[in-house]
Amino acid sequence: MRRLVGTAGLILRDPDRAEDAAQDAFIRAWRALPTLRDADRFDPWVTRMLVRACQDQLRKSRHGIQSEELLPEHGARVTDSAAQLADRDEIDRGLQRLSSEQRIPIVLRYYGGFSDREVAEVTGLPIGTVKSRIMRGLDAMRAALAADARGARVEERMA
Image (cartoon, rainbow, N blue to C red; front, side, top):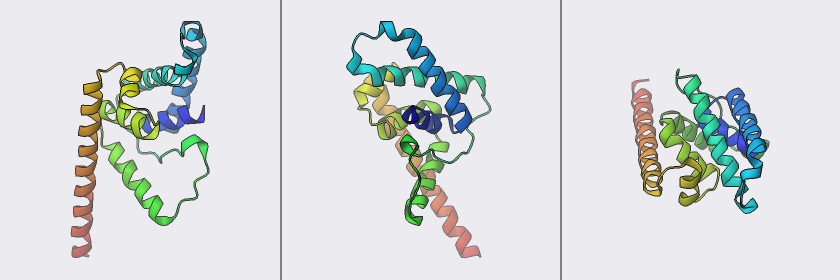
């Protein structure tokens, strides 16, 4: 459950909505459990339901992405060093700038640990589209973070 809440948190950027989406995914999974053909595919199956629940949440609140702290994986306590916190903040800022179409495959791939093929299965997208969205999303994150770094250097020089 914690992994699903964490994944939903990265997608939705709001811990309360992440909890709601995870709960909705579990209700959907419980109701659809008789349709699960292969128990070994449970994780991608329930994650697909989570992604759909997150997309429903995003449609309900078209006001955009809210800036929230990254949720720790599996509900782990955060004991990061200052450098790790800075990296985490930088990743968070990069994720905030992505559209949900780019953010979802990136979160599933790098946070959820799914392969490109599993991300395609979970999202219902062709594998080429998944690879493209991941590549373009990572490029957009790099560009946004580079722009932030340039802006910070300019501010330092002016101070």
